[in-house]
Length: 503
Ligand code: SF4
Image (cartoon, rainbow, N blue to C red; front, side):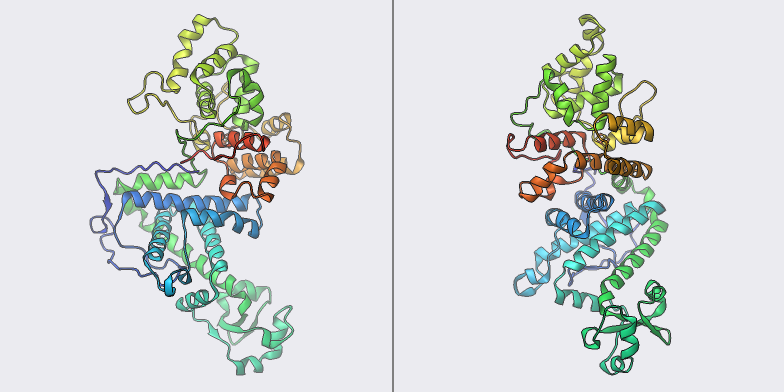
């Protein structure tokens, strides 16, 4: 889903803490006895710049997907089912019990090391602004919750004990003494034997006190064990928020580091709309009729940005420069050959002569395909189709231009009219799109429309286990939108294949 190309300088291979602004950090070997972590201690071992970036990108995939799940109103169960295979792939974190004899072996240590480092790298990337800090703390807490809830019972208990949270377990004698009060303060509980409590300063559980969900005596709140998860989560979130604030104060010292700053900038931009890499090796749609003559028909599978370019082209028989570039690269990405692309543009520009077309437009199409010009690296490949992030953030369209993303660059009224013109009449969907756009979740709005337009097919591939969550990851590339739409609407006709624009 996200760009995996690294941007480190291979000549400067390692992040050596001794030579950086972290020089005051003391090296400390971490042995990671527990699967879970509150990330209290920053890492100090050396890692390569490549690890620095790729580990962070892997974690970011998970966080971005978690955030998308919440924006798309997925239930906790749906979110867990969706994220689990992605976690296994990008950020596995196994229990001690999965190792021989329950002893933390090298595999477990490697997993935990990656988890530990990637968390702290993203802390650096996302501590710059209040908005990023808030979002990061929110999704990290979601991730922690998923893992905490799925943790092995014994290991979870040992982990919570290791946190030294100063929770006093209420002993049997006191429990009996306060039995009546404890029972009446715990809704739904009938028998004292069915629950245990612990005592904390009441100031640590203000919500429970406010909702009268706990018994309070002598400044101590008696919290039922069933509230343990929410207590642990609150503690996790509080510590993380404090940690992010202190990181933000330390950030200016990082400005001088010309190796890390570009990576961190790139990561934080990726949090708004995850960037999708585009792989040359991505197989074109096997057997799909991708030809100049069929583009009108195929445009039913295009995302709104490309539909808009297509209809504008049909209406005006012309598109301005950035529109032509965005659309040409998209068409290249869906598998249209250079010859067919030239034919498509020639036939579409009805108002000009062959000579004008050859002089004014032919070269640019060939250039986009890498047939002419460009540096040696691009020769033969041309430019990659634009991701949503690129379309959303670069070259906003001016008057008379049709490129860009309608979810971002149209007024809400124009966007609604365009959606209705393309058959989206569902009020709930339109309301959701409006809300997404107001909150600047442009690609979520696009995914909302996709999910609605393909709801029957998505249900089928899920119910029948034809596609897994990885194939239904949040769309962050127009070419993914097309490919996924085409495959879903042609279920049974097309062979199963990857539906993402990535490695
Ligand atoms: Fe196109 Fe991406 Fe915008 Fe959807 S979110 S319309 S795919 S740019």
